[in-house]
Length: 404
Image 1 (cartoon, rainbow, N blue to C red):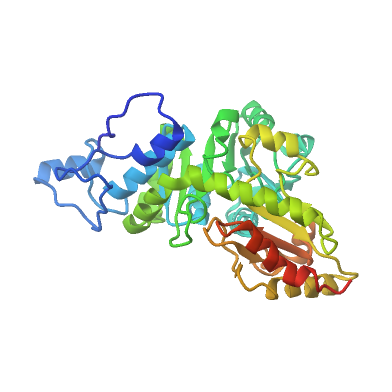
Image 2: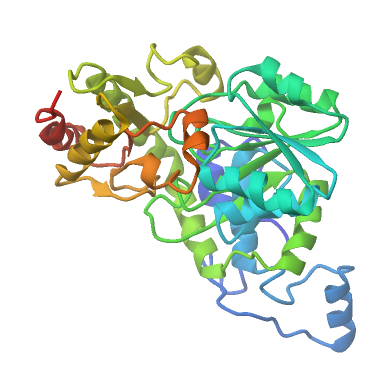
């Protein structure tokens, strides 16, 4: 289980193609895919030590697998953390985090702008087990501070948020968390480590949906947590017990996706900025949400935290005198496309378009949606690698024929 021997100080782009376990005895250049549920032990005594955790070695894929371990080592190297642990999905990673850190009587402070399923998992599902959650403004540090209690154990945010791309001040939230004896976890799904490393700003844990930009082509589900070895060891116990393990095949697909993460994110960001700038000039668009625009409320903060890039997700509002009219206009724009993929996934080479109020945030109450700023006229586009002229032309089919 030793790491591949690499010199220190390598660039992230090099780590993205090199960080992994040592090659097998066959000397493969592309990391091997170990499709096996269990591993044969050389003898009973060795088996006992490995199952007890007193000796390194693979025993059962629910607890460890060479392919999964290579993915974990590579992602940790990119995030600049001591370790990482894979999960079956991004939501599986958040579940793992909550199970590992929280118990009845604990308190969480969470941005109210996080992904809809995250809101329900932390606020509703863990509320059944006596965990209290206070939801606060993504961007108001004073509101986060006021929400902290003596029993607060975790502050959780995603930045930028899905779908309004609100950006939180990671360093300020880390200061609050540590002053209260709590941990700060940041969902880095939209930026990936190619643009943003939350631990460099003080975050303790980084959450990923590997399904998105890490994999890059919309093929498999995967998730991960990055952090210190001490914390990752806690989550390893949860996976062993609860079983939200990442499959070797999915780990291998994401492992290979990481090799092109850097160049893909540059192309995604270039397309995202070009689309956002174009949308701002369209008469059928009320407002554009994109951190790379000067008009974004947290533009300067985003540029500091995100390596000067705005990312690939662009959201925008279309008009409507009533929520029903706004929804009809949003549906018209979406249904008029002929190139973009109408799907709620993002991080794909194919540009995707969706209506958040009825998809990613469709299971929230109307009160929750309003609190998160998700209106019926909101459309989210995740810019892929399609040519920007074709994306603009596809959106024009609907925007140019809107009823104002």
